Each structure stands twice: as C-alpha cells, then as structure tokens.
Amino acid sequence: MAVTAALSLSACGKGGTSGGGGNTNFVTGNNGIDTAPVGKRAAAPDLSGKTIDGKVLNVADYKGKVVVVNVWGSWCGPCREEAQYFAKVSKQYEGKGVQFVGINTRDTSTTPAVAFEQAHGIGYPSLYDPTGRLMLRFKKGTLNPQMIPSTLVIDRHGKVAARALEPLDDTALLKMLKPVVAEK
Image 1 (cartoon, helix red, strand yellow):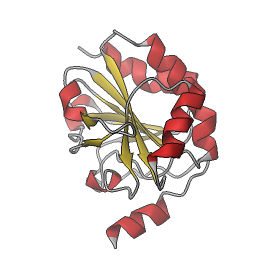
Image 2: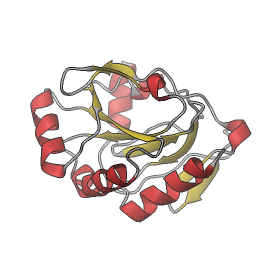
Image 3: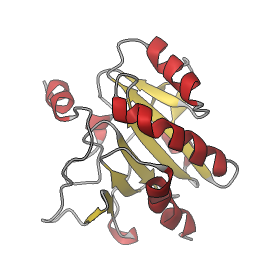
Image 4: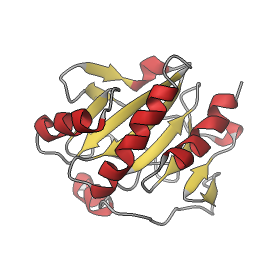
C-alpha cells in the first residue's frame, strides 16, 4: 500500500514543491535546491541492492566520499534531458572523492534502463528499484526523494546535504555538489 502511495506521488515531471518549514531543519528553495546545514543533516538510509547490470551495490561502501544519488526512469522525459549533464559532471569528478549512483525506478525490466545508460553515456552504477522501495526508506521530514527525477547529495559522513526535486543541468548540479565537496 505504501509503495502505491509513494509511486503515485512520484510522477515524472518538471518542477515541484519543496517541503520546508516546521521542524524539518532544512532551507527550502535555492532555485529548486534544498540544503541542510552540517549539524542538522539526517543520515541516508540503507541504499543497497542489485544494480541494473546484476552486480551488488551498497552506497554505504562509499562513506568518506561525497555521493550524488540520482533517481530516474528510462520512461521519464526530464530524466532523458538531464542525463547528459550527469554523465558530464560525473566524468569531471572522477577520482576526486565523488561517487555518482543512480536509482532506476519504475522500469519493469533492466533492459530499457541499461539501454538508457548506454545511450546517454552514464558510466556510474545504478541500483534497480522497480517498485520504489528504496525511496520509501527515507524518513518523512528529511531531504528525501519525492519525485522522478530527484537528486540527492550525501556528504562524506553519509548524511543527506542537498536535494533537488526537478531535472538539473550541469550548472544546477554543480551548485548542489561544490559546497559539499568543499566541506572538510
């Protein structure tokens, strides 16, 4: 039941409303990017499982690196638009303490997901999450992925530092990533 509710809320589209206020401890609306100050960040949940190419991946293994998590689907138009920018920025940050990870969701098989990554030059791994169960692991009131596409930046300590609930170009992606990379 919860999966159905989450999937109905995560319709693919441009724009969206960012939650804020209350006791959420994050700053809303920096051109669609929400951030949490260092001391107020929530830990990222367990993001592990099989990748679209059948390997096993656990995002926690990247602790000590900044991790960019992009939630996408091969069927999603805005995801196709932003893919080139993720491919470009991930190559720019190779070997610089940054790891990109995709979460492919709502594709009924891995075939279209693999074809999507090949067509767009995506060289980093993507977890296969056809039912959206990984998205449900994020606690309510935190910087969680609520739409497709969504992007999260996880700091070196495994805490969610920034979130975007809309497609990103390279400029917006770097605006999310650079401050977290600069943290000591």
